[in-house]
Length: 436
Image 1: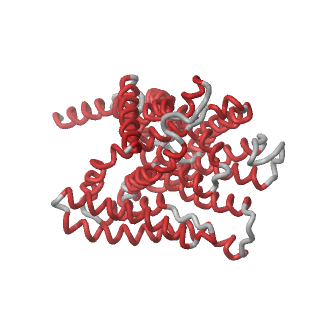
Image 2: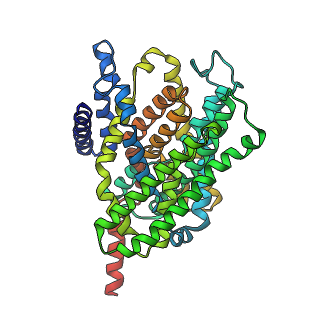
Image 3: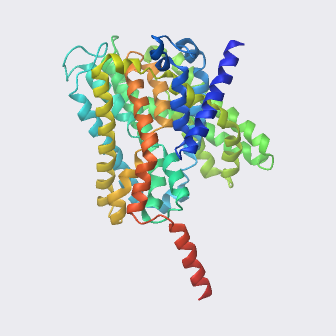
């Protein structure tokens, strides 16, 4: 009963935080994260220390809520991958996204590579140690994902329209996919670098491919099944909702069962990739896929509020207080990610021969970081527990910074591109043409 009471408090605190953030024209997720700090150990620093209202045991017990929320986020990402839509955006978007992802991954890895890491990852300055390389690979792969909600909110608020606006959304959707795939490969390599048990050579080579493509195949199968079933219930919204939830939960359950069954091989079948592929199959095989996605969206909001608020509660600012090195790592990661996003997007846009405003300002609109990165943290906590405290602190600080400053950079980008009130101008032009 106490746990249910704590969940109610988490929902209340998150709800209030979201409303406060909205009042300041910030993404609601920023409010969830910041107000979540009240419930965790960070606030207790003011009173001499302690775990806070939400303890580490509570976090572990409520972990299933995070897995459910992330599965829903992954499912919704899949909705962006309609083949017909991808054909429309063509090679230009793919080129921009690939270069942007490569740019940020390289920038983060290289900068973090030369900064000493605290115990227990490594002792002293050992840049070529397996622990240092593994740490850099994990954080670099987590830097690629973009949270589109904050940027989308700004574009809607200012009724933006133009080449930059039309480029941002497909790029953010695609770089989440690339980021999750790269993360799957990199965390598998990191596990091999830090493993103390012997592993057959064939497994070392094939393990990353098994994890990534195994997850994709499972998602394709489950998505195919769901797409065939929901057609029979497309007129009954509640039935579509229940069936979709069943399959999303199956995606989580199958990944957990397979990872447990093959625990001796330390597989990392990803429920995120599975549910992205389920969403992708719905987007491409159902005539009116939006009905499926909308039915599920009606169910997900409380899970998101609890998930992001708990994420804020898990952040322990005491680590920063006691270690200058952690602060340096966090600042280095935040700067490297911003530089990599901007430089990679600009290089990709130039190679793709995109419009000048896209080349100059796209990178500023790709800075927000949120749900997917938090989802990858859940994977890190289970597969690389030694690294988790340090990595979670860095990622959480980065999310707080980029979720609050991201809208400012997005507004700067569309303002410089001259796309503010672009929809109004488009409507006026349509009216003139209609009269003519």
